[in-house]
Image 1 (cartoon, rainbow, N blue to C red):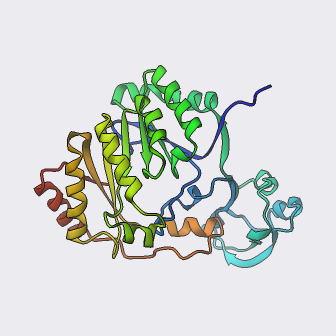
Image 2 (tube, one colour; image 1 turned 90 degrees about the vertical axis):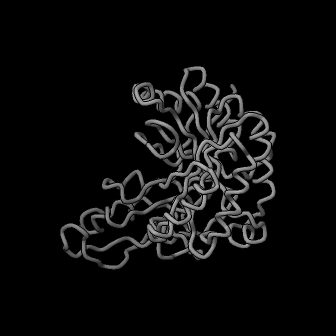
Length: 318
């Protein structure tokens, strides 16, 4: 018997209004080839499932402690005593030895307050299409649809393709949020079933791109050109990152590239840096260095927006 095609998904968010037109359901797939230090979804990076611990949900070993009893890999032990964020009573947290965790899920299954969860669930195409189709009334009344995001959803190309095909068969508007860092033949296959690409552009200088993000940008830019040539529609997304791409010169250079794509670009979104991802690194035991910076002030974002508007480009800020 042939096993059904599955994709690994770490979140499904309904009533999304920033991932394309109308009210949408956004599906987040795991796995990304980039290593952006400002990533607000660090749980998207790995291609495999992983343990996540939300400390504020933990009721303490004294009231629960089930996770300690069921872990077969000695990954959990009694930890430090802290004040509960709501009741202010003293509770003893668990301590996680992340290197010992085999992601078996036993602790998550036993954790009734859902402080411990497994990030990354396998869905078949049928399961996912059935889930997002429940929100069809919102799509129909608002001009919305389904956005497949990540991570980089095209790193799970066959699953993403089959989902897009099935959604189009149901008349649902489709959008794909992408880094652009995949071979173009993958874009060619999904283009007929993708109404809109949410396309990230981080920096026009390839050396700077590689130094910070971990990969060069030539493939990303060439894929954008080819998509524009082949009829793809793109909503360009520019994360505005302090000390990386927030200078007027950097934004103007990106704007010139967007102009070269002509009417393939429907709008440019400026996405100001925020530090909400920092706590997520702690939840998954992240030890690598991440960006912690002051979010750019509104006046800064407004000035960058004016630069692009003065170039004749449509711009929004999210």
